[in-house]
Image 1 (tube, rainbow, N blue to C red):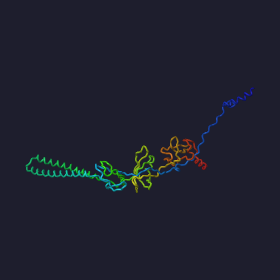
Image 2: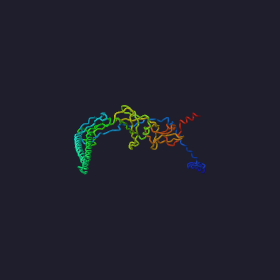
Image 3: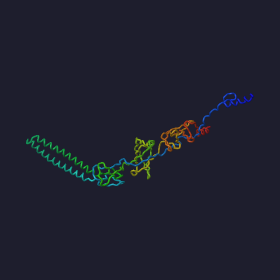
Image 4: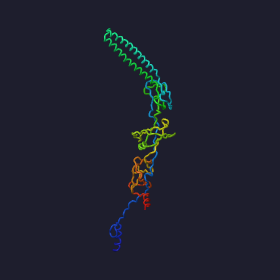
Length: 356
């Protein structure tokens, strides 16, 4: 009966994780994860110098609303929208009868004052002659002199009133302050215009320029561009950068750029896109990956894969990258990589074999 007991005992020890002699069996040694085989390229072999663009519109430094300066009815508006006009061209006339009447009254008042002044000056001359012969007192002579001075002051006032009335008459006719294109008429003949009422809108043709909304990340690139053009549906116009505003639109994250035309100019109000070739290096969109909510690219640093973040990168668009040209960019095998993962560079292994 003892033999069966002896046979069962080894089975019990094995079930409890013990060997037949009562000791624990050796645990298998865990193996390190296999390196991921990847292919790399120098950054200089894959970078782009893309053509960048921004929405733009032709505008003018002076878009002026010519307004009435006096209260009067609109007599005529001898211009039409879209019409080109020269500097000094009449763009509006107001009914000026009241202003001309006021001018005539002021001129009459000045003439009356001149007559009084002439008479007073003659009387002063006679009194001075009489005073020299002691026929009148000094007080009477001083009174005549004061009277002449008062009338002279009244004449200055009357003369100022004439000048003001003349200016009001001149305000009945409004002219273009520059070579312009009439954008619109803002009033109609017969309407009563008050001071400040806009009558016509004019675009200064000598001050045409381009206004463009440039993305914040592209502003520096535009400032360094060698050649900039405006492309409209009709044709292309070469441009020169005038300035980029330091203020940023917080909602659109854009900055306004102003550019001037080098030669030919399109029609005022024309729209299109400004385009320029970037001098900075950009990584193709295929190499831009997302990890932990951030966009970036995998680099080969020795035997490790490092995720290099690109803060300004956007999905589906080339990303600005500022790294040395010989930086190794991981190409094949990049999609499943994690930061810090061990890699084997296929290109490097091939090069080592050739060296042997």
